[in-house]
Amino acid sequence: MAEEKKELAPELKEKLRAEFEKDWRKDLRKAVPPKDRMKQVRQKMPERPAGERNKDFKEVNLGLTQDMAQAEARRCLDCANPQCIAGCPVAIDIPSFVKLIERGEFLAAAWKLKETNSLPAICGRVCPQETQCEELCAMKKASGVPVAIGNLERFASDFERLSGSINIPPLLPPTGKKVAVIGAGPAGLTVAGDLAKLGHKVTVFEALHESGGVLIYGIPEFRLPKAILKAEVDYLRRLGVDIRTSFVVGMTATIDDLRNDGYEAFFIGSGAGLPNFMKIPGENLVGVYSANEYLTRVNLMRAYAFPAYDTPVFQAKTAAVIGGGNVAMDSVRTAKRLGAERAVIVYRRSRTEMPARTEEIHHAEEEGIEFQLLTTPIRYFGDNYGHLRAMECQKMGLGEPDASGRRRPVPIEGSEYTIEVDLAVCAIGQSPNPLIPQTTPGLKMGKWANVEVDWATMATSLPGVYAGGDIIRGGATVILAMGDARVAAAQIDKYLRR
Image (cartoon, rainbow, N blue to C red; front, side, top):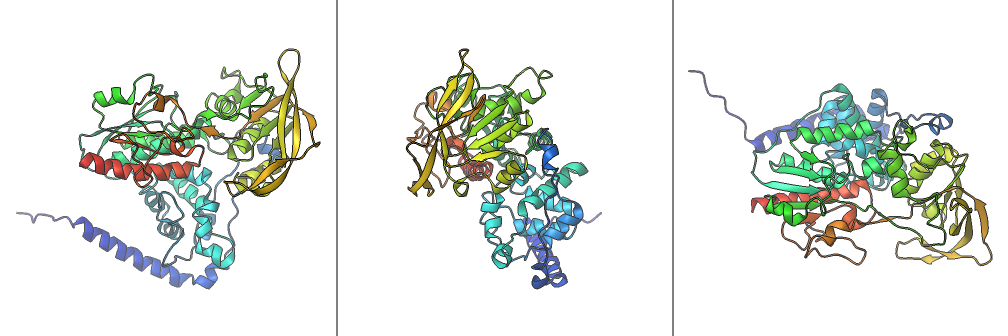
Protein backbone atom coordinates (compact mmCIF):
# COMPACT_ATOMS: atom_id res chain seq x y z
CA MET A 1 0.00 0.00 0.00
CA ALA A 2 1.42 3.35 -1.04
CA GLU A 3 2.49 5.58 1.80
CA GLU A 4 0.02 8.40 2.38
CA LYS A 5 1.41 11.84 1.49
CA LYS A 6 1.34 14.33 4.32
CA GLU A 7 0.89 18.05 3.66
CA LEU A 8 3.18 20.44 5.52
CA ALA A 9 1.38 22.60 8.05
CA PRO A 10 0.75 26.13 6.71
CA GLU A 11 2.90 27.74 9.40
CA LEU A 12 5.82 25.42 8.51
CA LYS A 13 5.41 26.21 4.83
CA GLU A 14 5.55 29.92 5.62
CA LYS A 15 8.64 29.45 7.79
CA LEU A 16 10.46 27.51 5.04
CA ARG A 17 9.44 30.10 2.45
CA ALA A 18 10.72 32.93 4.65
CA GLU A 19 14.03 31.11 5.21
CA PHE A 20 14.43 30.54 1.47
CA GLU A 21 13.65 34.17 0.73
CA LYS A 22 16.12 35.32 3.37
CA ASP A 23 18.87 33.22 1.78
CA TRP A 24 18.46 34.41 -1.79
CA ARG A 25 18.04 38.03 -0.70
CA LYS A 26 21.30 37.67 1.24
CA ASP A 27 22.93 36.43 -1.97
CA LEU A 28 21.63 39.47 -3.85
CA ARG A 29 23.06 41.80 -1.22
CA LYS A 30 26.48 40.16 -1.63
CA ALA A 31 26.24 40.34 -5.43
CA VAL A 32 25.62 44.10 -5.38
CA PRO A 33 26.89 45.86 -2.22
CA PRO A 34 24.93 48.91 -0.96
CA LYS A 35 27.61 51.39 -2.07
CA ASP A 36 27.31 50.08 -5.65
CA ARG A 37 23.51 50.16 -5.48
CA MET A 38 23.68 53.82 -4.53
CA LYS A 39 25.70 54.55 -7.68
CA GLN A 40 22.90 53.25 -9.90
CA VAL A 41 20.97 55.98 -11.73
CA ARG A 42 17.17 55.98 -11.54
CA GLN A 43 15.68 54.69 -14.79
CA LYS A 44 13.60 57.32 -16.59
CA MET A 45 10.15 56.20 -17.66
CA PRO A 46 9.94 56.24 -21.49
CA GLU A 47 7.28 58.66 -22.77
CA ARG A 48 5.67 59.55 -26.07
CA PRO A 49 6.76 62.93 -27.52
CA ALA A 50 4.65 65.80 -26.17
CA GLY A 51 3.84 67.24 -29.61
CA GLU A 52 2.47 63.86 -30.69
CA ARG A 53 0.63 62.73 -27.58
CA ASN A 54 -1.31 65.97 -27.01
CA LYS A 55 -3.35 65.22 -30.11
CA ASP A 56 -4.68 61.77 -29.17
CA PHE A 57 -5.76 59.69 -26.18
CA LYS A 58 -3.10 56.98 -26.30
CA GLU A 59 -1.14 56.37 -23.10
CA VAL A 60 1.63 58.88 -22.36
CA ASN A 61 3.99 56.65 -20.36
CA LEU A 62 5.29 53.59 -22.21
CA GLY A 63 6.51 51.45 -19.30
CA LEU A 64 9.95 50.13 -18.36
CA THR A 65 11.67 47.41 -20.38
CA GLN A 66 12.80 44.24 -18.58
CA ASP A 67 16.41 45.46 -18.48
CA MET A 68 15.34 48.86 -17.16
CA ALA A 69 13.13 47.26 -14.49
CA GLN A 70 15.95 45.02 -13.25
CA ALA A 71 18.38 47.94 -13.26
CA GLU A 72 15.94 50.03 -11.21
CA ALA A 73 15.28 47.14 -8.82
CA ARG A 74 19.03 46.91 -8.16
CA ARG A 75 18.82 50.36 -6.55
CA CYS A 76 16.76 48.91 -3.66
CA LEU A 77 18.86 48.67 -0.49
CA ASP A 78 16.64 45.92 0.99
CA CYS A 79 16.61 47.65 4.38
CA ALA A 80 16.34 45.71 7.62
CA ASN A 81 13.41 47.95 8.63
CA PRO A 82 11.75 49.04 5.36
CA GLN A 83 9.74 52.23 5.89
CA CYS A 84 8.37 52.14 2.33
CA ILE A 85 5.78 49.55 3.44
CA ALA A 86 4.55 51.94 6.13
CA GLY A 87 4.04 54.56 3.42
CA CYS A 88 1.74 52.28 1.39
CA PRO A 89 -1.95 52.49 2.37
CA VAL A 90 -2.49 48.86 1.30
CA ALA A 91 0.76 47.61 2.92
CA ILE A 92 2.37 45.99 -0.14
CA ASP A 93 5.52 43.99 0.69
CA ILE A 94 7.58 46.35 -1.44
CA PRO A 95 11.12 45.02 -0.81
CA SER A 96 10.06 41.46 -1.70
CA PHE A 97 8.39 42.29 -5.01
CA VAL A 98 11.26 44.61 -5.98
CA LYS A 99 13.85 41.93 -5.20
CA LEU A 100 11.91 39.40 -7.26
CA ILE A 101 12.14 41.80 -10.21
CA GLU A 102 15.89 42.11 -9.60
CA ARG A 103 16.16 38.32 -9.86
CA GLY A 104 14.13 38.32 -13.09
CA GLU A 105 11.17 36.55 -11.48
CA PHE A 106 8.62 38.94 -12.89
CA LEU A 107 5.54 36.74 -12.52
CA ALA A 108 6.42 36.01 -8.89
CA ALA A 109 6.74 39.77 -8.34
CA ALA A 110 3.24 40.34 -9.74
CA TRP A 111 1.80 37.59 -7.54
CA LYS A 112 3.53 39.07 -4.50
CA LEU A 113 1.86 42.41 -5.29
CA LYS A 114 -1.55 40.78 -5.52
CA GLU A 115 -1.28 39.35 -2.04
CA THR A 116 -2.38 42.75 -0.74
CA ASN A 117 -3.37 44.74 -3.84
CA SER A 118 -6.02 43.55 -6.29
CA LEU A 119 -5.42 46.50 -8.65
CA PRO A 120 -1.62 46.85 -9.07
CA ALA A 121 -1.64 47.87 -12.74
CA ILE A 122 -3.92 50.77 -11.81
CA CYS A 123 -1.94 51.81 -8.73
CA GLY A 124 1.29 51.70 -10.74
CA ARG A 125 -0.19 54.33 -13.04
CA VAL A 126 -2.25 56.72 -10.95
CA CYS A 127 -1.10 56.53 -7.30
CA PRO A 128 1.02 59.38 -5.88
CA GLN A 129 3.93 57.14 -4.88
CA GLU A 130 6.19 60.18 -4.64
CA THR A 131 4.35 61.33 -1.50
CA GLN A 132 3.81 57.86 -0.02
CA CYS A 133 6.07 54.81 -0.34
CA GLU A 134 8.81 56.61 -2.30
CA GLU A 135 8.82 59.49 0.17
CA LEU A 136 9.95 57.05 2.90
CA CYS A 137 12.37 55.08 0.70
CA ALA A 138 15.81 54.65 2.29
CA MET A 139 17.44 55.35 -1.07
CA LYS A 140 15.84 58.79 -1.08
CA LYS A 141 17.30 59.51 2.35
CA ALA A 142 20.70 58.23 1.25
CA SER A 143 20.95 59.73 -2.25
CA GLY A 144 17.99 62.08 -2.66
CA VAL A 145 16.40 59.92 -5.38
CA PRO A 146 14.02 57.13 -4.31
CA VAL A 147 13.59 53.77 -5.99
CA ALA A 148 10.86 54.07 -8.65
CA ILE A 149 8.47 51.80 -6.76
CA GLY A 150 5.38 52.86 -8.74
CA ASN A 151 7.06 52.23 -12.11
CA LEU A 152 8.18 48.79 -10.92
CA GLU A 153 4.67 47.97 -9.71
CA ARG A 154 3.33 48.87 -13.14
CA PHE A 155 6.02 46.79 -14.86
CA ALA A 156 5.33 43.62 -12.86
CA SER A 157 1.55 43.78 -13.22
CA ASP A 158 1.79 44.56 -16.94
CA PHE A 159 4.19 41.66 -17.42
CA GLU A 160 1.71 39.26 -15.81
CA ARG A 161 -1.19 40.52 -17.93
CA LEU A 162 0.73 40.42 -21.21
CA SER A 163 2.12 36.96 -20.44
CA GLY A 164 -1.40 35.57 -19.99
CA SER A 165 -0.29 33.86 -16.77
CA ILE A 166 -2.85 35.43 -14.47
CA ASN A 167 -2.55 33.80 -11.07
CA ILE A 168 -5.78 33.09 -9.19
CA PRO A 169 -4.83 32.61 -5.52
CA PRO A 170 -6.43 29.83 -3.45
CA LEU A 171 -9.73 30.95 -1.92
CA LEU A 172 -10.87 30.02 1.55
CA PRO A 173 -13.86 27.63 1.74
CA PRO A 174 -17.27 29.29 1.14
CA THR A 175 -18.79 30.74 4.30
CA GLY A 176 -22.32 31.03 2.95
CA LYS A 177 -22.31 34.73 3.91
CA LYS A 178 -23.51 37.35 1.43
CA VAL A 179 -21.94 40.81 1.25
CA ALA A 180 -23.28 43.77 -0.74
CA VAL A 181 -20.72 46.29 -2.00
CA ILE A 182 -22.15 49.59 -3.20
CA GLY A 183 -20.04 51.15 -5.93
CA ALA A 184 -17.51 49.56 -8.31
CA GLY A 185 -14.85 52.20 -7.79
CA PRO A 186 -11.38 51.56 -6.31
CA ALA A 187 -12.74 51.11 -2.77
CA GLY A 188 -15.58 48.80 -3.78
CA LEU A 189 -13.43 46.67 -6.08
CA THR A 190 -10.74 46.29 -3.41
CA VAL A 191 -13.10 45.25 -0.64
CA ALA A 192 -14.82 42.83 -3.03
CA GLY A 193 -11.54 41.14 -3.96
CA ASP A 194 -10.41 40.79 -0.36
CA LEU A 195 -13.74 39.34 0.82
CA ALA A 196 -13.96 36.91 -2.10
CA LYS A 197 -10.55 35.49 -1.16
CA LEU A 198 -11.89 34.98 2.35
CA GLY A 199 -14.72 32.79 1.09
CA HIS A 200 -17.66 35.21 1.18
CA LYS A 201 -20.19 35.64 -1.63
CA VAL A 202 -19.74 39.21 -2.82
CA THR A 203 -22.03 41.21 -5.10
CA VAL A 204 -21.01 44.69 -6.27
CA PHE A 205 -23.84 47.05 -7.21
CA GLU A 206 -22.74 49.77 -9.65
CA ALA A 207 -24.98 52.67 -10.75
CA LEU A 208 -23.25 53.23 -14.10
CA HIS A 209 -23.19 50.85 -17.04
CA GLU A 210 -19.47 50.11 -16.65
CA SER A 211 -17.37 49.13 -13.62
CA GLY A 212 -14.56 51.28 -12.30
CA GLY A 213 -16.12 54.37 -10.75
CA VAL A 214 -13.71 57.30 -10.92
CA LEU A 215 -11.18 55.01 -12.62
CA ILE A 216 -13.37 54.87 -15.71
CA TYR A 217 -15.33 58.13 -15.69
CA GLY A 218 -12.72 60.43 -14.16
CA ILE A 219 -9.24 59.37 -15.30
CA PRO A 220 -8.51 59.84 -19.03
CA GLU A 221 -7.41 57.09 -21.37
CA PHE A 222 -3.98 58.68 -21.77
CA ARG A 223 -3.29 58.08 -18.06
CA LEU A 224 -5.24 54.85 -17.49
CA PRO A 225 -6.26 52.86 -20.58
CA LYS A 226 -9.68 51.21 -20.32
CA ALA A 227 -8.14 47.86 -21.33
CA ILE A 228 -6.02 47.91 -18.15
CA LEU A 229 -9.06 48.58 -15.98
CA LYS A 230 -11.05 45.86 -17.75
CA ALA A 231 -8.29 43.32 -17.09
CA GLU A 232 -8.25 44.17 -13.37
CA VAL A 233 -12.05 43.89 -13.14
CA ASP A 234 -11.97 40.57 -15.02
CA TYR A 235 -9.48 39.29 -12.42
CA LEU A 236 -11.97 40.07 -9.65
CA ARG A 237 -14.71 38.24 -11.53
CA ARG A 238 -12.43 35.20 -11.70
CA LEU A 239 -12.20 35.39 -7.91
CA GLY A 240 -15.97 34.93 -7.88
CA VAL A 241 -17.09 38.55 -7.48
CA ASP A 242 -20.51 39.24 -9.04
CA ILE A 243 -20.78 42.77 -10.49
CA ARG A 244 -24.21 44.16 -11.33
CA THR A 245 -24.17 47.40 -13.32
CA SER A 246 -26.99 49.93 -13.88
CA PHE A 247 -28.15 49.20 -10.32
CA VAL A 248 -28.63 52.39 -8.29
CA VAL A 249 -28.70 51.56 -4.59
CA GLY A 250 -31.16 54.00 -3.08
CA MET A 251 -33.43 53.85 -6.15
CA THR A 252 -33.33 50.34 -7.65
CA ALA A 253 -33.21 48.99 -4.09
CA THR A 254 -32.25 50.37 -0.68
CA ILE A 255 -29.84 48.88 1.82
CA ASP A 256 -32.84 47.67 3.83
CA ASP A 257 -34.21 45.94 0.70
CA LEU A 258 -30.88 44.18 0.18
CA ARG A 259 -30.80 43.15 3.83
CA ASN A 260 -34.20 41.53 3.33
CA ASP A 261 -32.69 39.66 0.36
CA GLY A 262 -30.20 37.93 2.63
CA TYR A 263 -27.19 40.24 2.57
CA GLU A 264 -25.62 40.29 6.03
CA ALA A 265 -22.91 42.93 5.61
CA PHE A 266 -22.54 46.05 3.47
CA PHE A 267 -19.75 48.29 2.23
CA ILE A 268 -20.61 51.78 0.96
CA GLY A 269 -18.09 52.96 -1.62
CA SER A 270 -20.31 55.21 -3.70
CA GLY A 271 -17.74 57.98 -3.99
CA ALA A 272 -17.99 61.74 -4.30
CA GLY A 273 -19.94 62.33 -7.47
CA LEU A 274 -21.59 65.64 -6.57
CA PRO A 275 -19.63 68.47 -8.24
CA ASN A 276 -18.78 71.70 -6.47
CA PHE A 277 -19.18 75.06 -8.22
CA MET A 278 -17.87 78.51 -7.32
CA LYS A 279 -21.34 80.11 -7.23
CA ILE A 280 -20.34 83.08 -9.37
CA PRO A 281 -22.47 84.85 -12.02
CA GLY A 282 -22.76 83.08 -15.38
CA GLU A 283 -22.23 79.47 -14.28
CA ASN A 284 -25.45 78.46 -16.08
CA LEU A 285 -24.10 79.51 -19.50
CA VAL A 286 -23.64 76.92 -22.25
CA GLY A 287 -19.97 75.96 -22.21
CA VAL A 288 -19.53 75.94 -18.42
CA TYR A 289 -19.08 72.36 -17.18
CA SER A 290 -18.24 70.65 -13.93
CA ALA A 291 -15.16 68.47 -14.26
CA ASN A 292 -17.35 65.46 -13.39
CA GLU A 293 -19.64 66.00 -16.37
CA TYR A 294 -16.85 66.95 -18.77
CA LEU A 295 -14.63 63.96 -17.96
CA THR A 296 -17.55 61.52 -17.76
CA ARG A 297 -18.70 62.51 -21.24
CA VAL A 298 -15.22 62.12 -22.65
CA ASN A 299 -13.94 59.09 -20.72
CA LEU A 300 -16.92 56.85 -20.04
CA MET A 301 -19.12 57.87 -22.97
CA ARG A 302 -16.21 58.36 -25.40
CA ALA A 303 -17.19 61.82 -26.60
CA TYR A 304 -13.69 62.13 -28.06
CA ALA A 305 -14.81 59.63 -30.75
CA PHE A 306 -18.02 61.50 -31.72
CA PRO A 307 -19.94 60.69 -33.94
CA ALA A 308 -18.87 57.04 -33.61
CA TYR A 309 -20.14 57.41 -30.02
CA ASP A 310 -23.20 59.61 -29.77
CA THR A 311 -22.30 61.73 -26.73
CA PRO A 312 -21.01 65.06 -28.03
CA VAL A 313 -18.88 67.44 -25.99
CA PHE A 314 -18.20 71.09 -26.71
CA GLN A 315 -15.22 71.66 -29.02
CA ALA A 316 -13.46 74.73 -27.64
CA LYS A 317 -11.20 77.30 -29.20
CA THR A 318 -10.04 78.55 -25.79
CA ALA A 319 -10.55 76.31 -22.76
CA ALA A 320 -10.06 77.41 -19.15
CA VAL A 321 -9.96 74.89 -16.31
CA ILE A 322 -10.34 76.21 -12.78
CA GLY A 323 -8.38 74.28 -10.15
CA GLY A 324 -4.93 72.88 -9.42
CA GLY A 325 -5.45 69.20 -8.64
CA ASN A 326 -5.14 66.04 -10.72
CA VAL A 327 -8.74 66.40 -11.92
CA ALA A 328 -7.93 69.87 -13.25
CA MET A 329 -4.83 68.51 -15.05
CA ASP A 330 -6.88 65.69 -16.56
CA SER A 331 -9.53 68.16 -17.74
CA VAL A 332 -7.18 70.70 -19.31
CA ARG A 333 -5.07 68.04 -21.05
CA THR A 334 -8.29 66.49 -22.36
CA ALA A 335 -9.44 69.85 -23.75
CA LYS A 336 -6.10 70.22 -25.52
CA ARG A 337 -6.48 66.79 -27.11
CA LEU A 338 -9.98 67.67 -28.26
CA GLY A 339 -8.57 70.52 -30.33
CA ALA A 340 -8.49 73.60 -28.11
CA GLU A 341 -6.04 76.10 -29.61
CA ARG A 342 -5.42 77.48 -26.14
CA ALA A 343 -5.86 75.47 -22.92
CA VAL A 344 -5.31 77.27 -19.64
CA ILE A 345 -5.16 76.31 -15.95
CA VAL A 346 -6.54 79.07 -13.71
CA TYR A 347 -5.47 78.50 -10.10
CA ARG A 348 -5.84 80.82 -7.14
CA ARG A 349 -2.59 79.83 -5.41
CA SER A 350 1.00 79.48 -6.63
CA ARG A 351 2.57 76.41 -8.19
CA THR A 352 4.07 75.43 -4.82
CA GLU A 353 0.58 74.89 -3.38
CA MET A 354 -0.81 72.94 -6.34
CA PRO A 355 -2.06 69.53 -5.10
CA ALA A 356 -1.65 67.82 -8.49
CA ARG A 357 1.13 65.26 -8.92
CA THR A 358 4.44 66.76 -10.07
CA GLU A 359 4.44 64.39 -13.05
CA GLU A 360 1.01 65.56 -14.18
CA ILE A 361 1.99 69.23 -13.98
CA HIS A 362 5.20 68.50 -15.87
CA HIS A 363 3.36 66.58 -18.60
CA ALA A 364 0.81 69.39 -18.93
CA GLU A 365 3.54 72.00 -19.38
CA GLU A 366 5.26 69.83 -22.00
CA GLU A 367 1.97 69.52 -23.89
CA GLY A 368 1.51 73.27 -24.21
CA ILE A 369 -0.85 73.97 -21.32
CA GLU A 370 -0.73 77.57 -20.02
CA PHE A 371 -0.80 78.32 -16.29
CA GLN A 372 -2.38 81.48 -14.92
CA LEU A 373 -1.49 81.22 -11.24
CA LEU A 374 -2.57 83.40 -8.32
CA THR A 375 -5.75 84.02 -10.30
CA THR A 376 -9.43 83.26 -9.73
CA PRO A 377 -12.51 83.75 -11.94
CA ILE A 378 -15.20 86.04 -10.54
CA ARG A 379 -17.73 86.16 -13.40
CA TYR A 380 -18.59 84.54 -16.74
CA PHE A 381 -19.96 86.50 -19.71
CA GLY A 382 -22.17 85.07 -22.45
CA ASP A 383 -23.58 86.15 -25.81
CA ASN A 384 -27.22 86.74 -26.71
CA TYR A 385 -27.74 83.01 -27.16
CA GLY A 386 -26.51 82.05 -23.68
CA HIS A 387 -23.13 80.74 -24.80
CA LEU A 388 -19.96 81.41 -22.80
CA ARG A 389 -17.72 84.02 -24.42
CA ALA A 390 -15.45 85.47 -21.70
CA MET A 391 -14.35 85.16 -18.09
CA GLU A 392 -13.48 87.97 -15.70
CA CYS A 393 -10.58 87.12 -13.36
CA GLN A 394 -8.95 88.68 -10.35
CA LYS A 395 -5.33 88.40 -9.25
CA MET A 396 -4.61 86.96 -5.80
CA GLY A 397 -1.92 87.29 -3.17
CA LEU A 398 -1.01 84.71 -0.52
CA GLY A 399 -1.76 85.30 3.14
CA GLU A 400 -1.37 83.12 6.21
CA PRO A 401 -1.83 79.31 5.98
CA ASP A 402 -5.40 78.01 6.24
CA ALA A 403 -6.71 74.69 7.60
CA SER A 404 -5.12 72.80 4.68
CA GLY A 405 -1.66 74.09 5.66
CA ARG A 406 -1.39 76.06 2.41
CA ARG A 407 -1.21 79.86 2.32
CA ARG A 408 -4.66 81.40 1.96
CA PRO A 409 -5.33 83.27 -1.31
CA VAL A 410 -6.31 86.93 -0.80
CA PRO A 411 -7.94 89.03 -3.57
CA ILE A 412 -5.97 92.03 -4.84
CA GLU A 413 -8.29 95.01 -5.33
CA GLY A 414 -8.24 96.63 -8.76
CA SER A 415 -6.50 93.65 -10.42
CA GLU A 416 -9.52 92.43 -12.44
CA TYR A 417 -9.07 91.53 -16.12
CA THR A 418 -11.04 89.63 -18.77
CA ILE A 419 -10.00 86.78 -21.06
CA GLU A 420 -11.95 85.32 -23.98
CA VAL A 421 -12.98 81.70 -23.38
CA ASP A 422 -15.67 79.48 -24.87
CA LEU A 423 -15.21 76.51 -22.51
CA ALA A 424 -14.79 76.62 -18.73
CA VAL A 425 -14.42 73.50 -16.60
CA CYS A 426 -14.80 73.83 -12.84
CA ALA A 427 -12.46 71.35 -11.10
CA ILE A 428 -12.50 72.59 -7.50
CA GLY A 429 -13.59 69.36 -5.81
CA GLN A 430 -16.57 67.09 -5.28
CA SER A 431 -18.92 66.25 -2.44
CA PRO A 432 -20.11 62.76 -1.42
CA ASN A 433 -23.08 61.26 -3.25
CA PRO A 434 -26.19 62.06 -1.13
CA LEU A 435 -28.52 59.32 -2.41
CA ILE A 436 -27.57 56.49 -0.05
CA PRO A 437 -27.59 58.64 3.11
CA GLN A 438 -31.00 59.99 2.12
CA THR A 439 -32.46 56.49 1.76
CA THR A 440 -30.76 54.79 4.72
CA PRO A 441 -32.37 55.74 8.05
CA GLY A 442 -29.97 55.83 10.99
CA LEU A 443 -26.82 56.34 8.91
CA LYS A 444 -24.85 59.04 10.74
CA MET A 445 -23.49 61.86 8.58
CA GLY A 446 -20.77 64.48 9.09
CA LYS A 447 -21.05 68.20 8.47
CA TRP A 448 -19.61 67.88 4.95
CA ALA A 449 -22.29 65.32 3.94
CA ASN A 450 -19.77 62.50 4.42
CA VAL A 451 -20.66 59.18 6.03
CA GLU A 452 -19.15 59.04 9.51
CA VAL A 453 -17.10 55.96 10.41
CA ASP A 454 -14.92 54.60 13.17
CA TRP A 455 -11.57 55.09 11.43
CA ALA A 456 -10.08 52.04 13.14
CA THR A 457 -12.69 49.71 11.61
CA MET A 458 -14.54 51.72 8.90
CA ALA A 459 -17.80 50.78 10.68
CA THR A 460 -20.71 53.21 10.31
CA SER A 461 -23.46 53.89 12.85
CA LEU A 462 -25.47 50.93 11.49
CA PRO A 463 -24.64 47.31 12.42
CA GLY A 464 -22.94 45.42 9.62
CA VAL A 465 -22.57 48.53 7.45
CA TYR A 466 -19.07 49.83 6.62
CA ALA A 467 -17.84 52.60 4.32
CA GLY A 468 -14.64 53.88 2.72
CA GLY A 469 -13.16 56.08 0.03
CA ASP A 470 -14.57 59.41 -1.11
CA ILE A 471 -17.95 58.86 0.58
CA ILE A 472 -16.14 59.33 3.92
CA ARG A 473 -13.23 61.54 2.81
CA GLY A 474 -14.62 63.77 0.06
CA GLY A 475 -12.40 63.85 -3.01
CA ALA A 476 -9.21 61.88 -2.19
CA THR A 477 -6.81 59.51 -3.96
CA VAL A 478 -7.38 56.05 -5.39
CA ILE A 479 -4.89 54.42 -3.02
CA LEU A 480 -6.39 55.99 0.11
CA ALA A 481 -9.78 54.58 -0.92
CA MET A 482 -8.17 51.18 -1.36
CA GLY A 483 -6.51 51.45 2.06
CA ASP A 484 -9.92 52.14 3.63
CA ALA A 485 -11.32 49.13 1.80
CA ARG A 486 -8.65 46.75 3.09
CA VAL A 487 -9.37 47.79 6.68
CA ALA A 488 -13.11 47.42 6.09
CA ALA A 489 -12.74 43.98 4.46
CA ALA A 490 -10.84 42.62 7.47
CA GLN A 491 -13.47 43.99 9.84
CA ILE A 492 -16.39 42.72 7.73
CA ASP A 493 -14.82 39.25 7.78
CA LYS A 494 -14.59 39.39 11.59
CA TYR A 495 -18.19 40.62 11.82
CA LEU A 496 -19.52 37.81 9.61
CA ARG A 497 -17.56 35.10 11.40
CA ARG A 498 -18.83 36.30 14.77
